[in-house]
Length: 574
Image (cartoon, rainbow, N blue to C red; front, side, top):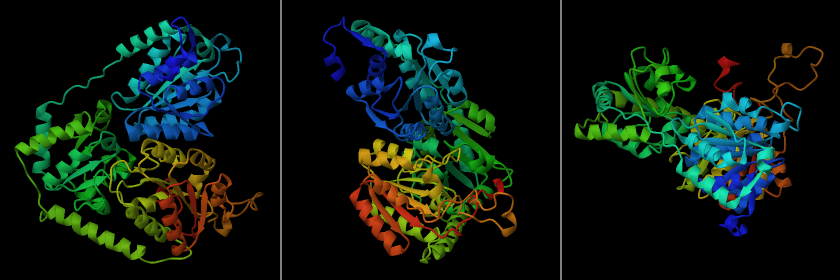
């Protein structure tokens, strides 16, 4: 290891930066995202020397989004490094995003000198208190001797139980303290041997029996799964369960691809029927929150019985299902499949419930295809989305990772774009967060280098972090950004004449951007490839060329500013 080669004597001294880097490397960190500066630049440099790849961003917010998505895609904590004070505050976006989506992320921030805290030191902030609402565990290393233990703690706790965000505070004076190499090695060994093992209580077989009985006796059963099941790598067990029982399934947006959208038992295109009429719903790795209408009428039947599988006991207690199974999604499904294998049952394709789902799916897909087959120019959302869908499917396997954000862009894309493989869709998630796109793209390219990454973004979502296209070019990542450019949030100025009043009536509308913005030129400014397209032929050509090149590219798609709806499908909230 490079670090050990640099230390020729056990009596040599190393500082806190080096010890933190050594700890990260020893405890399994391979990648780090962030922005360097006072006081953590040396930490980043040492980490690189010790084999940790550092992906440098322009803004901690995007770096944090990348770290959170990396945690989801790999199952390992994504590590975010920030400077003190405002750097820490910027990083809260990524930390909280990981927390709300239950993805493992560790934010490490430098902080001011401990002896000067409270006196107005450079970038002074009580960072441990600041992060507490957005993390499951926060700790400060108050002395260099505490660094290895603290690093081990945050890495372990980020993935234990329900995954989430952890925070490590490294004061400037601790980073500058020194100890001997021999003492450092002793501390590292102690921290490694003291790693916590978090064990979950076992699920009693009687509860598995109850779950299987409910599914077997149901007239209209449904299996619902989300990104928690994707994180648990439960796709194999889900496939076995669905295909052995013949029960229709409904993925949440980021559960799409655990089973292919094209599967004959997929109920996505019959969602309202499926959730409105099912009598038993096995919900795996998905929360009964706003995305699933809280599991309540009128969207759901008042008599539906929920069997909720979640790694978090508190989540089950909150939702009060008919039956709760606390545990890892994959392991719980293994137990359910084993029980079913001993006493098999299958609905069969002629079962009235399966037939109803299939018929509704076929009807809705046919109606959408009528809209999709038309070439509408100036572009609406449907025409370019169909062309993008076909281009992505044409890549084959390994399928590209799709990153999607925006109001209309994400809503239409969720219905049109087809997911065929697990963990190949990243979107605004549980919080509906805008601005995640480029961070997610970079994380996906780093975590899954064998896959092309394709982002389908609204122009507003793209604008949050557009300068990170330079990061794509700097690291030569295989990312194609497709920007649906309709001139603003939802589509520019849609005000009625009577709404245009007041002393600032001549200002642009709050929803509008510069018409015809040349987003492709931004990519070209950093020596990436840019395309401006407005017809089907131009879009097909740009997709074919950029997908084949697997180099950073921005495709600027001109959309009719009056296409789509305000707030997408969330008009009732705005």
